[in-house]
Length: 547
Image (cartoon, rainbow, N blue to C red; front, top):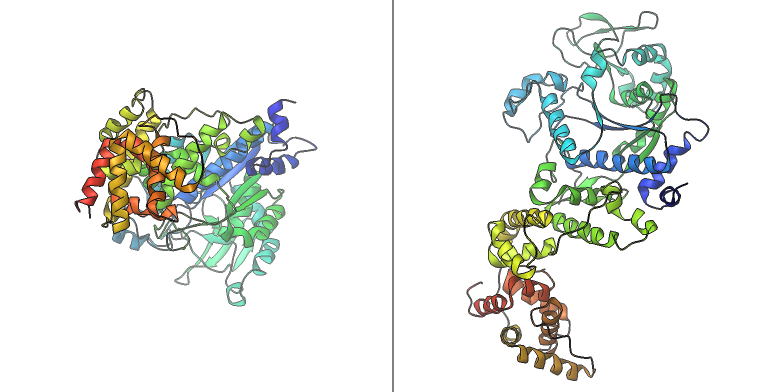
């Protein structure tokens, strides 16, 4: 057994824990189909949102972990439920008025309001696949419209007719009495209107595999369940799809968790062992509400990628999947910086630590080196101080701070600079609120500016601070423009000017100089922005030119 596999078999990282559960299914013998099947589902009733990406990203992490601990081949299917009827018109699409005449039609029969694809379902499928392809996921895409229409689902549908009473018994236990009177696991697609019908069955013919029902106008129809004439209600569809494809693993949100026994029972009735499950907590918007495709709240895939890298998004998805997380634009900078911190740490860790590091799972074990010599949060503050509206402005500062860095040698840093400018323009600049300093803060800022302009003054401040605090700390190494020395100067000024809690001093720096209540490690900011430039920024604040 390789060292990697041995470590993976005991790793506490959640993808390895889930992978080991899947492997237990085949302790006695490998799957007859020749591979272990991971599935993720997508309901294309609205534009793909970030939660959809999260399912594929997390499932891929588990699939990759499985491939480390087992030699059994794997496959990932992304299944789109695009035969579902459109129940309401999404609020975040153009030309929405054109959709109202197509309510209850399968999504692949609804015109595309974007006027780019043959249907709304095709459009949303394409949006999902475009992103998954951009990220480099390895998957096979399945369309319910095609799956039902080409007969791939026919055998399971016939079996569902034959086992109709058993499946109905499972479903009826979960329904209110009023709903029980009209419920059927089958939803016929009207031969004339093309609408998905929610009507009771008059007859289910187990020999001919047909259903008989009255449409909304009272006309009786008899249809075969095969060939795309009928689809299954969504709960039976879950279990039937697992049985048809012989799915071994699928994850879904907490809102599905109460239905798990139903899905599993139907899957078993139709002849397949229920797959392993992983239930994740839901994403919330800035108001604590569940994000939704149809309402368009929260952050979309494209919006995240306007302001940050795909790796930062994958990092966000990796973190605590069983904990509800607020997903709004203000989480993006933190995700960018924490991802890079983990990337830097990875190459200094032993194998056990590496397997527990999120970046191993984000990159499937092939983890690159970090070239982010400037944190993203620092780039944001630099953009704010310089009022930068292009990344070339930031590179003027970066080159002075890190002379060996160029956009060509540090592409991740170059991309991050572009993200920082865009984030600054859209979120930081509109919210900037400067204030004038108090008398205490003014005195401290004047002395800080003087220290930044003269090395001897800076050293004297540090000596005075040490004497005041009664310690004999050695003087910091005198590298006047370094992050650490400048931070020592800022710290000394705060102590000498009576800030009992230095957080108040740093908060004053951010509010007076940067127009925000939070900010960077100020010594590092001054080193990047420039010592003389920082002193000039202080002068402008003291003159009232910022507030």
